[in-house]
Length: 471
Ligand code: GLC
Image (cartoon, rainbow, N blue to C red):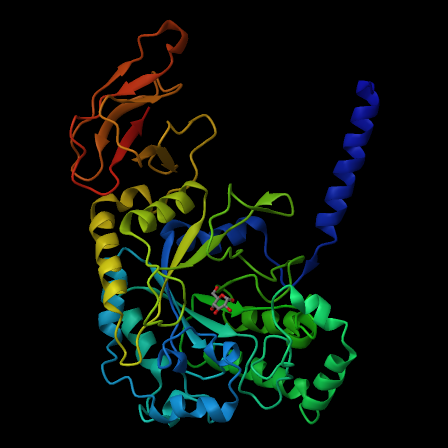
């Protein structure tokens, strides 16, 4: 067994090492942790936002990756550009629906991987203003959403399947015919024909020119639309054959520019700058909620799960795996209970409307949020001393000192909360402020516990919440 002294020695070496690592962390800009916390505060309070994936892919209506999945050339895809005319587009209606669902911020795809721009860019003709619709969608969108008091964000795809200088790679619609994203790519890579193919097909393409285009467009969207609260850059794949990352995007320079243009802006983590301080603000688990509050560099990270109502981000007419209201609410509660945010996606139709299934889902979330949002806004993971009773999830508001018990599996005969005796001033259901009586647990071995007397009948809310006002 090691002596105490040698353990101490090891610990101090470890401490020195970790402080050296954090000291030597590369920096994109100067900001203290406290300043970052303050900059992020509106977002951590908000907890809930909307993602909007909208582009030409709404017309094929079979996934936003359709161009790549079906290996369409620019010519094949042109028909969608030629007829794009969302005549029913009413951004105020969208904004009202987001707001009524309880969402506080909204991120829209200014450009997705297909390369089509919702905005009027100086640097391309491939934009909404040149379609039959003829207007700058981003401009209309921004003013409507701002008017409803929502924070606004732009998603911008780092890669581009339309730009003539973007080099063809494994994700591109024109990739090597047998080159897939699946596990078989490893085997396929060993095929020398593949190298040859990419060499040939990329002749005349100048990635540096694309890099300039990307930087110019990010500058445009962060200059021409006033204050932007979030930028969501998507994504890097340097580890894949012929993949792209920080070098190809020149991410360091890109993020520095973003910070200069909009110093308050929040940046997601997909520009391949993981180890840079300031290279990103929050991490972005996709379509899943982490088991526990995720950590980066040994510290709890700011994080946001992005997820779809059903299996695709863009409008997908025939997709049927729509999540239930209960499932969606439980995702929101779970992310909050682990200190994270939820960005829930709508893929509008090519007429410019929300799909009826998305509208229904938003409405039901709104019904719950209208009376229960106090357990979400400004809330986070409960302090360790509180243990969630079986079948429940906890959230906590440090400012108001209130604890929230979300009853996922309703039980009539009471809920036992450990180590709570003497710590609770008052308990009530959140949706109707009706008192929930509680008593000290009678078993001597659990004398510190209380039993909350839940009524026989489950209240008429999808997931009832008990609010505890703490001593
Ligand atoms: C992925 C997909 C994309 C979607 C995004 C949302 O990166 O490529 O279609 O926009 O995830 O997180």
